[in-house]
Length: 433
Image 1 (cartoon, rainbow, N blue to C red):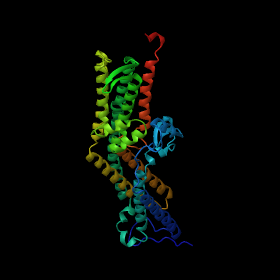
Image 2: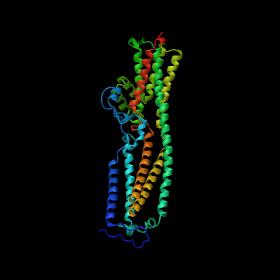
Image 3: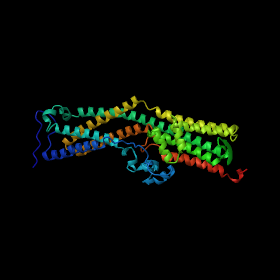
Protein backbone atom coordinates (compact mmCIF):
# COMPACT_ATOMS: atom_id res chain seq x y z
CA UNK A 1 0.00 0.00 0.00
CA UNK A 2 1.12 3.54 -0.67
CA UNK A 3 2.29 5.51 2.29
CA UNK A 4 -0.04 8.39 3.10
CA UNK A 5 1.30 11.80 2.11
CA UNK A 6 3.12 13.65 4.82
CA UNK A 7 2.60 17.33 5.46
CA UNK A 8 5.65 19.44 4.79
CA UNK A 9 7.17 20.44 8.10
CA UNK A 10 8.16 24.00 8.84
CA UNK A 11 6.17 25.33 5.90
CA UNK A 12 2.66 26.65 5.43
CA UNK A 13 2.47 25.25 1.92
CA UNK A 14 -0.82 24.22 0.37
CA UNK A 15 0.85 21.27 -1.40
CA UNK A 16 1.67 17.96 0.27
CA UNK A 17 4.29 15.43 -0.77
CA UNK A 18 3.07 12.85 -3.30
CA UNK A 19 2.27 9.22 -2.55
CA UNK A 20 5.19 6.89 -3.29
CA UNK A 21 3.71 5.14 -6.35
CA UNK A 22 2.53 8.40 -7.94
CA UNK A 23 5.86 10.07 -7.25
CA UNK A 24 7.67 7.14 -8.84
CA UNK A 25 5.50 7.35 -11.95
CA UNK A 26 6.06 11.09 -12.30
CA UNK A 27 9.78 10.61 -11.82
CA UNK A 28 9.92 8.00 -14.58
CA UNK A 29 8.10 10.35 -16.98
CA UNK A 30 10.06 13.53 -16.16
CA UNK A 31 13.50 11.99 -15.82
CA UNK A 32 12.88 9.93 -18.95
CA UNK A 33 11.73 13.02 -20.84
CA UNK A 34 14.85 14.89 -19.79
CA UNK A 35 17.12 12.04 -20.87
CA UNK A 36 15.31 11.64 -24.21
CA UNK A 37 15.48 15.39 -24.91
CA UNK A 38 19.21 15.55 -24.21
CA UNK A 39 19.80 12.46 -26.35
CA UNK A 40 17.89 13.97 -29.28
CA UNK A 41 19.74 17.27 -28.84
CA UNK A 42 23.13 15.54 -29.00
CA UNK A 43 22.11 13.45 -32.03
CA UNK A 44 21.15 16.59 -33.98
CA UNK A 45 24.26 18.55 -33.02
CA UNK A 46 26.30 19.63 -36.03
CA UNK A 47 23.61 18.88 -38.61
CA UNK A 48 22.67 21.76 -40.89
CA UNK A 49 19.51 22.64 -42.79
CA UNK A 50 21.31 23.45 -46.05
CA UNK A 51 22.96 21.27 -48.67
CA UNK A 52 26.02 21.85 -50.80
CA UNK A 53 24.11 21.45 -54.09
CA UNK A 54 20.66 20.65 -55.43
CA UNK A 55 21.23 16.94 -56.07
CA UNK A 56 21.74 17.33 -59.84
CA UNK A 57 25.54 17.27 -59.82
CA UNK A 58 25.70 13.49 -60.10
CA UNK A 59 24.87 11.95 -63.44
CA UNK A 60 25.63 12.51 -67.10
CA UNK A 61 24.08 14.55 -69.87
CA UNK A 62 22.84 18.10 -70.12
CA UNK A 63 21.10 19.96 -67.32
CA UNK A 64 17.76 19.39 -69.03
CA UNK A 65 18.39 15.63 -69.15
CA UNK A 66 19.44 15.54 -65.49
CA UNK A 67 16.40 17.54 -64.43
CA UNK A 68 14.13 15.23 -66.43
CA UNK A 69 15.75 12.21 -64.78
CA UNK A 70 15.49 13.57 -61.22
CA UNK A 71 12.08 15.21 -61.36
CA UNK A 72 9.46 13.46 -59.27
CA UNK A 73 6.25 14.19 -57.41
CA UNK A 74 5.68 13.57 -53.72
CA UNK A 75 2.17 14.21 -52.39
CA UNK A 76 1.37 17.62 -53.94
CA UNK A 77 4.96 18.80 -54.41
CA UNK A 78 6.98 18.77 -57.63
CA UNK A 79 10.62 18.14 -56.73
CA UNK A 80 13.70 18.61 -58.89
CA UNK A 81 16.62 16.91 -57.18
CA UNK A 82 16.11 17.87 -53.53
CA UNK A 83 14.41 21.22 -54.17
CA UNK A 84 10.75 22.20 -54.46
CA UNK A 85 10.01 23.39 -58.00
CA UNK A 86 6.24 23.82 -57.59
CA UNK A 87 3.47 22.92 -55.18
CA UNK A 88 -0.28 23.06 -54.79
CA UNK A 89 -1.13 25.98 -52.44
CA UNK A 90 -4.15 24.05 -51.15
CA UNK A 91 -1.74 21.54 -49.60
CA UNK A 92 -1.24 24.07 -46.80
CA UNK A 93 -4.70 23.16 -45.53
CA UNK A 94 -3.16 19.98 -44.12
CA UNK A 95 -0.36 21.14 -41.78
CA UNK A 96 1.43 17.78 -41.74
CA UNK A 97 1.36 17.31 -45.52
CA UNK A 98 4.83 17.79 -46.94
CA UNK A 99 6.25 18.79 -43.55
CA UNK A 100 9.60 17.27 -44.58
CA UNK A 101 9.88 19.97 -47.27
CA UNK A 102 9.35 22.84 -44.81
CA UNK A 103 11.42 24.47 -42.10
CA UNK A 104 10.12 21.80 -39.70
CA UNK A 105 12.25 19.31 -41.61
CA UNK A 106 15.49 21.10 -40.69
CA UNK A 107 17.71 19.59 -38.02
CA UNK A 108 18.73 22.94 -36.39
CA UNK A 109 15.09 23.72 -35.56
CA UNK A 110 14.59 20.43 -33.77
CA UNK A 111 17.97 20.64 -32.07
CA UNK A 112 17.01 23.98 -30.51
CA UNK A 113 13.55 22.63 -29.72
CA UNK A 114 14.87 19.63 -27.80
CA UNK A 115 17.36 21.86 -26.00
CA UNK A 116 14.54 24.00 -24.60
CA UNK A 117 12.36 20.94 -23.96
CA UNK A 118 15.11 19.59 -21.71
CA UNK A 119 15.01 22.93 -19.84
CA UNK A 120 11.27 22.50 -19.29
CA UNK A 121 11.74 18.96 -17.98
CA UNK A 122 14.59 20.11 -15.73
CA UNK A 123 12.40 22.87 -14.31
CA UNK A 124 9.66 20.32 -13.71
CA UNK A 125 12.03 17.96 -11.89
CA UNK A 126 13.46 20.71 -9.67
CA UNK A 127 9.98 21.96 -8.78
CA UNK A 128 8.68 18.47 -8.05
CA UNK A 129 11.73 17.44 -6.02
CA UNK A 130 11.74 20.69 -4.04
CA UNK A 131 9.40 19.04 -1.51
CA UNK A 132 10.92 15.58 -1.86
CA UNK A 133 14.64 14.88 -2.44
CA UNK A 134 15.67 18.54 -2.53
CA UNK A 135 13.41 19.74 0.28
CA UNK A 136 16.30 20.65 2.62
CA UNK A 137 17.91 22.77 -0.08
CA UNK A 138 15.05 24.23 -2.12
CA UNK A 139 12.16 24.03 0.28
CA UNK A 140 12.48 27.60 1.44
CA UNK A 141 13.09 28.95 -2.06
CA UNK A 142 9.94 27.40 -3.50
CA UNK A 143 7.81 28.27 -0.46
CA UNK A 144 6.39 31.36 -2.18
CA UNK A 145 5.57 29.34 -5.31
CA UNK A 146 3.52 26.81 -3.35
CA UNK A 147 2.00 29.20 -0.80
CA UNK A 148 0.08 31.36 -3.30
CA UNK A 149 -0.15 32.24 -6.97
CA UNK A 150 1.61 35.61 -6.82
CA UNK A 151 5.05 34.24 -7.71
CA UNK A 152 3.79 32.07 -10.56
CA UNK A 153 1.70 34.97 -11.87
CA UNK A 154 4.76 37.21 -12.00
CA UNK A 155 6.74 34.47 -13.76
CA UNK A 156 3.96 33.99 -16.30
CA UNK A 157 3.79 37.73 -17.00
CA UNK A 158 7.54 37.85 -17.59
CA UNK A 159 7.37 34.96 -20.08
CA UNK A 160 4.37 36.50 -21.88
CA UNK A 161 5.91 39.97 -22.20
CA UNK A 162 9.22 38.71 -23.54
CA UNK A 163 7.31 36.57 -26.05
CA UNK A 164 5.37 39.62 -27.25
CA UNK A 165 8.59 41.56 -27.94
CA UNK A 166 10.14 38.56 -29.65
CA UNK A 167 7.08 37.97 -31.83
CA UNK A 168 7.12 41.60 -32.97
CA UNK A 169 10.78 41.53 -34.02
CA UNK A 170 10.45 38.10 -35.65
CA UNK A 171 7.39 39.30 -37.59
CA UNK A 172 9.17 42.46 -38.73
CA UNK A 173 12.19 40.43 -39.82
CA UNK A 174 9.98 37.96 -41.70
CA UNK A 175 8.26 40.80 -43.55
CA UNK A 176 11.66 42.21 -44.55
CA UNK A 177 12.92 38.80 -45.65
CA UNK A 178 9.90 38.09 -47.85
CA UNK A 179 10.15 41.57 -49.38
CA UNK A 180 13.83 41.03 -50.15
CA UNK A 181 13.08 37.67 -51.74
CA UNK A 182 10.38 39.18 -53.98
CA UNK A 183 12.72 42.02 -54.98
CA UNK A 184 15.56 39.64 -55.92
CA UNK A 185 13.20 37.59 -58.05
CA UNK A 186 11.46 40.51 -59.75
CA UNK A 187 14.40 42.83 -60.44
CA UNK A 188 17.09 40.16 -60.61
CA UNK A 189 15.97 36.82 -62.03
CA UNK A 190 13.05 38.21 -64.02
CA UNK A 191 15.29 40.98 -65.33
CA UNK A 192 17.70 38.36 -66.71
CA UNK A 193 14.85 36.39 -68.27
CA UNK A 194 13.30 39.49 -69.83
CA UNK A 195 16.58 40.81 -71.25
CA UNK A 196 17.62 37.42 -72.64
CA UNK A 197 14.23 36.69 -74.22
CA UNK A 198 13.93 40.13 -75.82
CA UNK A 199 17.46 39.86 -77.19
CA UNK A 200 16.62 36.47 -78.71
CA UNK A 201 13.47 37.87 -80.27
CA UNK A 202 15.26 40.77 -81.97
CA UNK A 203 18.08 38.59 -83.29
CA UNK A 204 15.67 35.90 -84.50
CA UNK A 205 13.62 38.44 -86.48
CA UNK A 206 16.44 40.66 -87.76
CA UNK A 207 19.33 38.35 -88.58
CA UNK A 208 19.38 36.47 -91.90
CA UNK A 209 19.47 32.68 -91.87
CA UNK A 210 23.14 32.69 -92.93
CA UNK A 211 25.86 35.16 -93.80
CA UNK A 212 29.57 35.25 -94.42
CA UNK A 213 32.27 36.96 -92.35
CA UNK A 214 35.99 37.46 -92.84
CA UNK A 215 37.96 35.57 -90.21
CA UNK A 216 41.72 35.42 -89.62
CA UNK A 217 41.72 32.17 -91.59
CA UNK A 218 39.56 33.57 -94.39
CA UNK A 219 35.83 33.74 -95.15
CA UNK A 220 33.57 31.81 -92.76
CA UNK A 221 29.84 31.14 -92.91
CA UNK A 222 27.73 32.09 -89.89
CA UNK A 223 24.29 30.71 -89.10
CA UNK A 224 21.51 32.49 -87.25
CA UNK A 225 20.78 29.32 -85.28
CA UNK A 226 24.38 29.19 -84.01
CA UNK A 227 24.24 32.77 -82.76
CA UNK A 228 20.91 32.23 -81.02
CA UNK A 229 22.12 28.98 -79.46
CA UNK A 230 25.27 30.67 -78.14
CA UNK A 231 23.35 33.64 -76.72
CA UNK A 232 20.95 31.21 -75.03
CA UNK A 233 23.76 29.13 -73.49
CA UNK A 234 25.50 32.23 -72.17
CA UNK A 235 22.29 33.53 -70.58
CA UNK A 236 21.68 30.16 -68.92
CA UNK A 237 25.26 30.12 -67.69
CA UNK A 238 24.96 33.58 -66.12
CA UNK A 239 21.86 32.57 -64.12
CA UNK A 240 23.38 29.22 -63.20
CA UNK A 241 26.48 30.96 -61.85
CA UNK A 242 24.34 33.07 -59.50
CA UNK A 243 23.12 29.90 -57.80
CA UNK A 244 26.53 28.26 -57.72
CA UNK A 245 28.68 31.18 -56.57
CA UNK A 246 26.30 33.48 -54.67
CA UNK A 247 24.21 30.70 -53.17
CA UNK A 248 26.26 27.52 -52.84
CA UNK A 249 29.57 29.42 -52.56
CA UNK A 250 31.29 27.15 -55.07
CA UNK A 251 34.70 28.11 -56.35
CA UNK A 252 34.87 29.48 -59.89
CA UNK A 253 36.82 26.45 -61.08
CA UNK A 254 34.31 23.94 -59.67
CA UNK A 255 31.30 25.88 -60.94
CA UNK A 256 32.68 26.17 -64.48
CA UNK A 257 33.74 22.52 -64.49
CA UNK A 258 30.26 21.30 -63.53
CA UNK A 259 28.61 23.63 -66.05
CA UNK A 260 30.87 22.26 -68.76
CA UNK A 261 29.86 18.70 -67.85
CA UNK A 262 26.19 19.77 -68.11
CA UNK A 263 26.82 21.18 -71.60
CA UNK A 264 26.10 24.80 -70.68
CA UNK A 265 29.61 26.03 -71.56
CA UNK A 266 32.28 24.83 -73.98
CA UNK A 267 35.89 24.12 -73.06
CA UNK A 268 37.08 27.32 -74.73
CA UNK A 269 34.47 29.39 -72.88
CA UNK A 270 35.37 27.82 -69.53
CA UNK A 271 39.04 28.66 -70.07
CA UNK A 272 38.18 32.25 -70.97
CA UNK A 273 35.85 32.73 -67.98
CA UNK A 274 38.38 31.18 -65.61
CA UNK A 275 40.73 34.06 -66.41
CA UNK A 276 38.18 36.71 -65.39
CA UNK A 277 37.60 37.93 -61.83
CA UNK A 278 33.82 37.98 -62.26
CA UNK A 279 32.53 35.43 -64.81
CA UNK A 280 28.88 36.36 -64.16
CA UNK A 281 29.26 39.90 -65.50
CA UNK A 282 31.89 38.75 -68.00
CA UNK A 283 29.28 36.66 -69.80
CA UNK A 284 27.09 39.70 -70.35
CA UNK A 285 30.10 41.56 -71.72
CA UNK A 286 30.21 38.81 -74.34
CA UNK A 287 26.58 39.56 -75.22
CA UNK A 288 27.48 43.19 -75.87
CA UNK A 289 30.53 42.17 -77.92
CA UNK A 290 28.43 39.92 -80.18
CA UNK A 291 25.95 42.75 -80.75
CA UNK A 292 28.76 45.14 -81.59
CA UNK A 293 30.21 42.63 -84.09
CA UNK A 294 26.81 42.17 -85.73
CA UNK A 295 26.47 45.94 -86.00
CA UNK A 296 29.93 46.19 -87.60
CA UNK A 297 28.83 43.64 -90.19
CA UNK A 298 25.75 45.81 -90.96
CA UNK A 299 23.44 43.03 -89.73
CA UNK A 300 22.04 45.20 -86.93
CA UNK A 301 21.53 48.85 -87.73
CA UNK A 302 19.89 51.88 -86.23
CA UNK A 303 17.08 51.15 -83.73
CA UNK A 304 17.72 47.39 -83.76
CA UNK A 305 21.30 47.82 -82.63
CA UNK A 306 20.35 50.30 -79.91
CA UNK A 307 17.53 48.04 -78.68
CA UNK A 308 19.81 44.99 -78.53
CA UNK A 309 22.51 46.96 -76.75
CA UNK A 310 19.91 48.24 -74.27
CA UNK A 311 18.73 44.70 -73.48
CA UNK A 312 22.31 43.49 -73.03
CA UNK A 313 22.92 46.37 -70.64
CA UNK A 314 19.66 45.49 -68.88
CA UNK A 315 20.86 41.93 -68.37
CA UNK A 316 24.18 43.21 -67.06
CA UNK A 317 22.38 45.57 -64.67
CA UNK A 318 20.20 42.71 -63.40
CA UNK A 319 23.30 40.61 -62.79
CA UNK A 320 25.03 43.44 -60.91
CA UNK A 321 21.82 44.04 -58.94
CA UNK A 322 21.75 40.39 -57.83
CA UNK A 323 25.40 40.33 -56.87
CA UNK A 324 25.41 43.59 -54.93
CA UNK A 325 22.13 42.91 -53.11
CA UNK A 326 23.28 39.45 -52.07
CA UNK A 327 26.47 41.02 -50.72
CA UNK A 328 24.44 43.64 -48.82
CA UNK A 329 23.30 41.46 -45.93
CA UNK A 330 20.89 42.27 -43.14
CA UNK A 331 22.79 44.07 -40.36
CA UNK A 332 24.35 41.44 -38.14
CA UNK A 333 23.59 43.47 -35.02
CA UNK A 334 19.85 43.24 -35.74
CA UNK A 335 19.99 39.53 -36.53
CA UNK A 336 22.01 38.87 -33.38
CA UNK A 337 19.58 40.92 -31.28
CA UNK A 338 16.57 38.99 -32.57
CA UNK A 339 18.41 35.71 -32.00
CA UNK A 340 19.24 36.68 -28.41
CA UNK A 341 15.68 37.79 -27.73
CA UNK A 342 14.30 34.56 -29.20
CA UNK A 343 16.56 32.37 -27.10
CA UNK A 344 15.92 34.36 -23.91
CA UNK A 345 12.17 34.35 -24.54
CA UNK A 346 11.99 30.62 -25.26
CA UNK A 347 14.32 29.80 -22.36
CA UNK A 348 12.17 31.89 -20.00
CA UNK A 349 8.98 30.27 -21.30
CA UNK A 350 10.49 26.80 -20.90
CA UNK A 351 11.70 27.52 -17.36
CA UNK A 352 8.39 29.03 -16.24
CA UNK A 353 6.52 26.27 -18.02
CA UNK A 354 8.61 23.69 -16.15
CA UNK A 355 7.64 25.27 -12.81
CA UNK A 356 3.97 25.28 -13.84
CA UNK A 357 4.16 21.64 -14.91
CA UNK A 358 5.84 20.64 -11.64
CA UNK A 359 3.26 22.52 -9.60
CA UNK A 360 0.43 20.87 -11.53
CA UNK A 361 1.92 17.41 -10.97
CA UNK A 362 2.27 18.05 -7.24
CA UNK A 363 -1.42 18.82 -7.24
CA UNK A 364 -1.99 15.64 -9.32
CA UNK A 365 -3.57 17.79 -12.05
CA UNK A 366 -2.17 15.87 -15.00
CA UNK A 367 -4.37 17.60 -17.59
CA UNK A 368 -2.99 21.02 -16.62
CA UNK A 369 0.55 19.60 -16.72
CA UNK A 370 0.01 18.31 -20.25
CA UNK A 371 -1.45 21.67 -21.29
CA UNK A 372 1.57 23.55 -19.94
CA UNK A 373 3.93 21.10 -21.68
CA UNK A 374 2.07 21.62 -24.98
CA UNK A 375 2.38 25.41 -24.59
CA UNK A 376 6.14 25.07 -24.01
CA UNK A 377 6.52 22.85 -27.08
CA UNK A 378 4.50 25.10 -29.40
CA UNK A 379 6.25 28.27 -28.21
CA UNK A 380 9.72 26.79 -28.71
CA UNK A 381 8.95 25.16 -32.07
CA UNK A 382 7.26 28.19 -33.67
CA UNK A 383 9.88 30.64 -32.39
CA UNK A 384 12.87 28.60 -33.54
CA UNK A 385 11.23 27.68 -36.86
CA UNK A 386 10.61 31.37 -37.63
CA UNK A 387 14.14 32.32 -36.58
CA UNK A 388 15.74 29.56 -38.69
CA UNK A 389 13.53 30.37 -41.68
CA UNK A 390 14.66 33.99 -41.64
CA UNK A 391 18.33 33.10 -41.15
CA UNK A 392 18.30 30.81 -44.19
CA UNK A 393 16.01 32.95 -46.37
CA UNK A 394 18.19 36.05 -46.33
CA UNK A 395 19.81 34.53 -49.42
CA UNK A 396 17.14 32.68 -51.46
CA UNK A 397 19.81 31.15 -53.71
CA UNK A 398 21.20 29.04 -50.86
CA UNK A 399 20.10 25.44 -51.27
CA UNK A 400 17.30 25.06 -48.71
CA UNK A 401 13.77 23.73 -49.10
CA UNK A 402 12.35 27.27 -49.50
CA UNK A 403 15.07 28.63 -51.81
CA UNK A 404 14.72 29.35 -55.52
CA UNK A 405 14.94 26.10 -57.47
CA UNK A 406 17.96 26.21 -59.78
CA UNK A 407 16.69 23.51 -62.14
CA UNK A 408 13.28 25.14 -62.55
CA UNK A 409 14.69 28.68 -62.90
CA UNK A 410 17.36 27.85 -65.47
CA UNK A 411 15.05 25.65 -67.54
CA UNK A 412 12.35 28.33 -67.37
CA UNK A 413 14.81 30.75 -68.96
CA UNK A 414 15.81 28.15 -71.54
CA UNK A 415 12.19 27.35 -72.42
CA UNK A 416 11.27 31.06 -72.71
CA UNK A 417 14.16 31.82 -75.06
CA UNK A 418 13.53 28.72 -77.22
CA UNK A 419 9.84 29.56 -77.45
CA UNK A 420 10.61 33.11 -78.63
CA UNK A 421 13.09 31.86 -81.23
CA UNK A 422 10.70 29.21 -82.56
CA UNK A 423 7.77 31.61 -82.73
CA UNK A 424 9.87 34.18 -84.59
CA UNK A 425 10.80 31.58 -87.24
CA UNK A 426 7.33 30.07 -87.64
CA UNK A 427 5.33 33.21 -88.33
CA UNK A 428 1.70 32.99 -89.56
CA UNK A 429 1.04 33.51 -93.27
CA UNK A 430 -0.11 37.10 -92.78
CA UNK A 431 3.30 38.06 -91.35
CA UNK A 432 5.42 36.35 -94.00
CA UNK A 433 6.96 38.74 -96.49
